[in-house]
Length: 170
Image 1 (cartoon, helix red, strand yellow):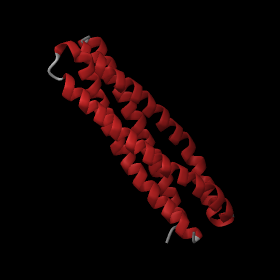
Image 2: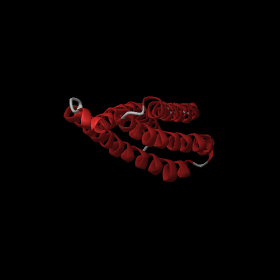
Image 3: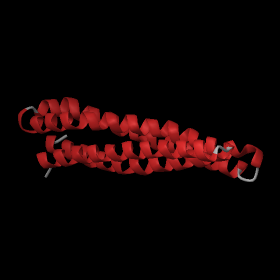
């Protein structure tokens, strides 16, 4: 049976994972800057590019989810008892879009991981292409980290959406 506690649990978990995204994003940027300023090699520069870009994306996505979670949680708990039509007409369509987006994210991350692995494979033995090798390493790390985080978010999202739909008897 889907309850208000399940709504609370979902949005609290979303908020917690948003912290993970922001911390990993910040950590990636710090590591990238360390590599740029300490190692100063082509490999380090290549590695830093995806770490910085995806790190910024993780911070932005994490903050966006974090800043919206409390309001969505309270709104949906309210709708559970007092405005189930809004839950049906707003939350279900919102979550269906979120779940469709996870499909896009998953395949984009898999594609980026493959590109990263190909860069590693093609340029690992060529010192003149160390920037590309570093780019491949950084891209692979970031794509796989994103894929893992999104796997758990997507799983949680499906459970929540299925719970809302079962409660509304959809």
